[in-house]
Amino acid sequence: ILNVEQSPQSLHVQEGDSTNFTCSFPSSNFYALHWYRWETAKSPEALFVMTLNGDEKKKGRISATLNTKEGYSYLYIKGSQPEDSATYLCACGRGGADGLTFGKGTHLIIQP
Amino acid sequence: DGGITQSPKYLFRKEGQNVTLSCEQNLNHDAMYWYRQDPGQGLRLIYYSQIVNDFQKGDIAEGYSVSREKKESFPLTVTSAQKNPTAFYLCASSTTRTRSRELFFGEGSRLTVL
Image (cartoon, rainbow over the protein chains, first blue to last red):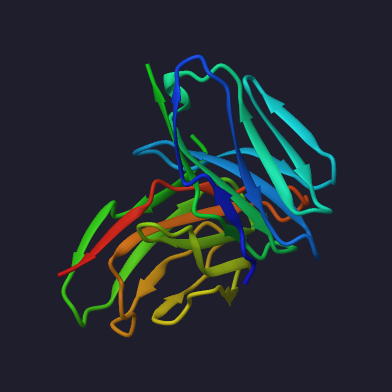
């Protein structure tokens, strides 16, 4: 079983501030790294899927980077807004369509 | 609209009873998955299926069973052998044709054993 760690577990951020959090994973046999956003009472939704070392992806104010050699990924949110409040899940692909191994998530609360 | 439908949303079961959770998708995805969420834990993989009539155990398959008779459907049965069945269950699907196989999730089913 892969060990995917996310930190911090929870985070309170003032509206307008920028923030980031971390996902670490085993660097050996890397296949893919996923980030999902899970808002209360909704389904988790994919933000990014990254497969190559050095990948950087951006969607609006949210971006992510990937370092497969050292086994970590960062998710950045610029200028946090209340709608960014959610749990952010990181997951590693196991190869093929064998499912993902998820971290415990980072629970982000944006305070007005 | 394309998506994944899970039912029921809430389910109560007495100890010793089997219960089946439904998962249907109209995204034409080959792969389907069942995850379980418990407080303070990440999503854990129960079973997955990459193709009709085939499925594999995930990390916590004991006490669960699945079937995949149709591409669109992947029901999960929580049997009486599952020691701690109270949990939130998520179904997901994905394509198998690219390496970046993002998961599409249903809204989940919350099972409570009384």
